[in-house]
Amino acid sequence: MERLADPAEALNNSIIVIEHWAVAEPDFGRQHLAARGYDVRVVEPWRGAILPELTGEETGVMLMGGPQYVTALDEAPYLVDEMRFAEAAMAKNVPLVGVCLGSQMIAHVLGARVGNHPDGAMAMGYYNVAPTDEGRRYIPDGMKVLAGNSQGWDMPSGVTALAHGELFANQAFQAGETTIALQFHPEVTRKILDQWQTEFADSIGRLGTHSIEEQDAGFDEYDQALKAWYMGFLDRWFGAGN
Image (cartoon, rainbow, N blue to C red; front, side, top):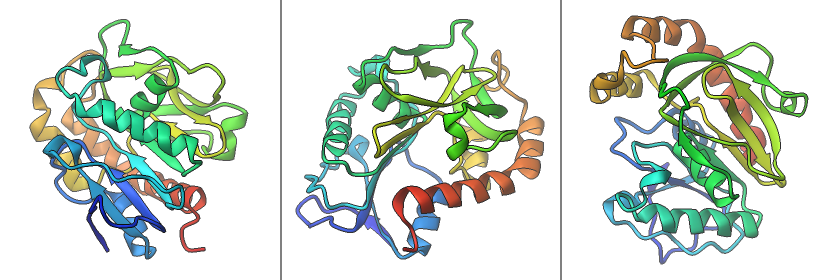
């Protein structure tokens, strides 16, 4: 099962998931890890929740996506604490995954530039990602992924590039042995995609985005394979089911 984290409670053998918006339902990754028997604990600093103290014994941390921007910390000052939390996870070798905004925060912590697409484009739909030679350890050739972002990151110095994309050039990297960043969204369920299409409707039609019909067709064609990949990735990264 999953629950809201109590910052005063020991978090050993749990996975801490940091959320940034009122998601329509627990995303696929949260559902999968909970089904594996992990104690999935959700923390929402955007709603005033306090981040717990990491002991280094946690199973993992996930920094999820959201509508905030690393380039506008004055509008979301709690992201500063989240980035310190990410730094602590990296320092304590707690397995860390950043998704979209989460990946941008990790890139920022590592000194990379985060910002808008040079042509003002935005991703919203299904796009090709191409693994690097090192990235084939995690990402297969020919994978189509769901993306939803208007900002991306330069590849940080000293990391291992894992994947590149057709709209935003950088899509995944690994830092050290315990940190991985994914610019794309393998966690989005059909219900959450419906929420995207409603709450971010004004973005559809921007350069680079796909129509609702294209997004729906992409979900029907690619989601099953993407979710199968994500299950395997989470199992491997966090040791789920071991």
